Length: 322
Ligand code: RIB
Ligand code: CA
Image 1 (tube, rainbow, N blue to C red):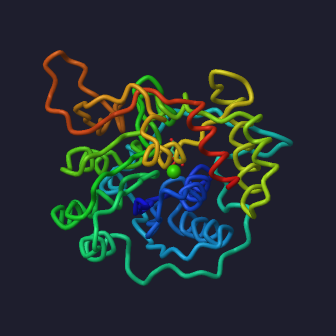
Image 2 (cartoon, protein in one colour):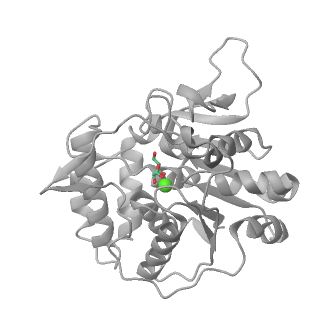
């Protein structure tokens, strides 16, 4: 029986690989995709999502979501962030997420309903519970929880979240990007009654992909193989330059690890039932704080502190090649 899933994405490069792998995975039935602003403005993340669906040839409804975070936008000072290293090649900054994916412009349309209305009106009426895999800022989920948390939670069996980091951050000294972008929404998700599995950078920086894995992908004949290989190679190039992993010629494909976790929980290691709270404001903006005390606060999530590289890389390439 396939697992019915909804993807919530801010399509950039690793979201694109997550979407392709979820569509290609025989264990999953992607019933809808919701877009959110994050890596890029909502217009771009939505267009990029449509382009990936064109590439795969999948008939999946896309619901456009929030164009700005729940509350952060009201306080411009919270957008300030420590300067980050950039990579200049031939005089041009190399970005891990280009504005638009290098795919033909899509002619598809999104659904007339917003992602919020989809979560609150359509999902509760599904014949069976569905799994949500959120790999961008959690704004859509936070707004839906604010409007009607009972309806939002009523038919969700589990939520997988790519986000956060304890030993590892990327957007600021204390935070990973998805959570930094909308901390209030992340706290609402951590506190909601739906069981959640958090896939932070601690997991995705261990469950990485190498150039050797990509070389196998390049032998594939599926229409998405070349795009996926180029996209992952670009991520490896940037990781090698700016965020080196345990070995050279290696890169994280964060969002696809969350998809893999929904199929193969053993891709995550050191997965702990913990109380997760989110830093809001100041130096802790967007920090994922798991209570380490002997007598901790009541757990509200499962939080993975490691990842299994072999499991992930094998699954990803096999799935994209199939
Ligand atoms: O920090 C990694 C996360 O931020 C990934 O989801 C990536 O797509 C960006 O959204
Ligand atoms: Ca993402």
